[in-house]
Image 1: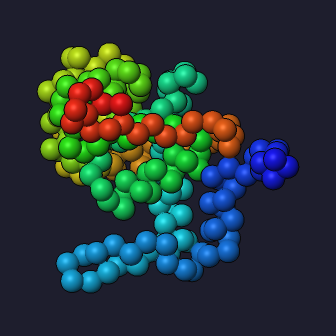
Image 2: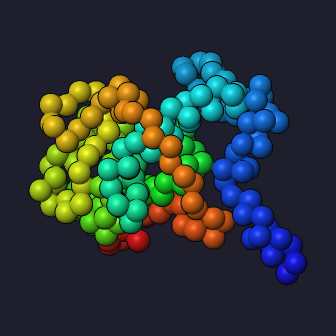
Length: 193
């Protein structure tokens, strides 16, 4: 149809939509996070400040790899940070691979080896322990970003170290027809799909 052709020619991708929302709704609430008995509200503008930091760090960390390897995987529990990292990937054109937080080791090996991702972002030491236990089986993994907790492994960097990475401008080359996210099933009935 003509409408589909217009959309495709305009390349009105996630980045364009996101930038428009920041411009038009900067002071409006985007997320409400439950903390105990209350809600904490985050505006579009507040979210964008964190997204920009994450985007810069993600661009920096993937700059060490070839264009085919410009993917990151998330082994993250549901959180605001997971959503903001996802937005950062989508707005910079970095493909992400979502691994269900309840995945068992064999499924994580399957997903990471199939997707050939060099960088994994984990939410905490519990998720990191899954990676530590299977590290020797992970053929492509080079680095892990630990969002919360501590680790002595040389291949693991903290959130603080991640955010301090030298800013590198990553050109968003993803169009509206490009793959942006891979989401695997938890694999309860066999290998993840």
